[in-house]
Image (cartoon, helix red, strand yellow):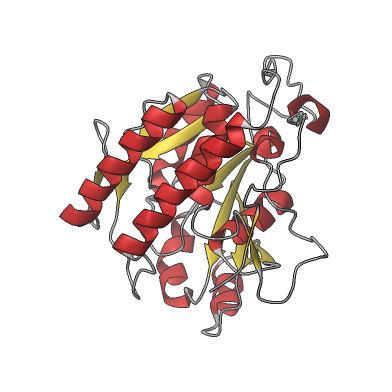
Length: 283
């Protein structure tokens, strides 16, 4: 049962070789938060460093490859009322978490971070990536009727009882070959989350956020390939939405702390379309 008056906060942190960054990042996160670290097979001592810094941290090993699978594993493991998506590289400002929580307490279902709304900013984005992001969120707004100012940003928060709306791949799916990735397992996850919450017509509130520079290491982002991947994701998700019929999503009355159930939130698909690309082989 969710608690809207004094919600418990779960911070989900995907990691892959982020030991050096965690030594700076984890001490900044409040001990009032449940920390769920989801590791993708780090070989630099990431897990040991996390346990050394925060003895109360929960360590989960992701079941497949990719950031999307890591987040899905973290969402499933989280026990708080609110889930915060938090990168381990130092680019997310821990002091902004209360800002996201306040947006949810004020009535939002999904608090979406934005670098390009008033009060936001970035110490990391290049002019080329900024221009590309502007074009991509214009496409997203056209396809989904949204008013996003920043599509490609992963600092977000939402009520945990909305996880079923996202309909992410099962983390323990049996019929997946070693090394295979499903649709939603990769970096397309952040775009998928935005699209599926938009299609579910949940209440979305943008939250100004300042992206900090990565502390150590190099980003895995690739401007052109990732941009085309996001564009493909937008059209794929729009096709999916058009071929799924859904009832309006009932919103819980958080004054009574009644959580939505999986049955309340599930999509009702009247037809199965084999051409939808739910699965994707890894490169």
